[in-house]
Length: 181
Image (cartoon, rainbow, N blue to C red; front, side, top):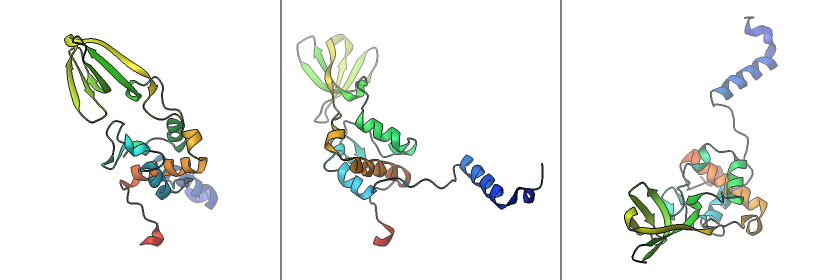
């Protein structure tokens, strides 16, 4: 291997940057959007917090998004907001009809060969034995809104994505600008 000096300054800086990227220590590209505006949207206009939790605040029907942005790209997060998976059973309301005609509606949290654990929109858990279940079906419309492309501007989506990623990286929803301190 030749001595590093023979690479010259430019090639050596490029090599070091490449090695740091392999270690996960590269400088990240700046994200578009303002995470503080994204927080306002998450807990307000976008209604994300009605179902999703962020650092302990928000709803319980959707998944906890506190670490969601840690491993996904901004494009992947934006896509999952604009185009939620229509086939996902976790994005559908289940309606369970019992043999005695009693019905329960909510999100299936767990199921096995013997039971179904369902959480209704009010937070109540229902532990149902499979033997007593007559029918299980899913409502066709997803729980997550599918109209974000129409209700949020592209800049607002950038803000929301930036907030989700920032919280995952910092572990904080109390976002302050360096100038605020």
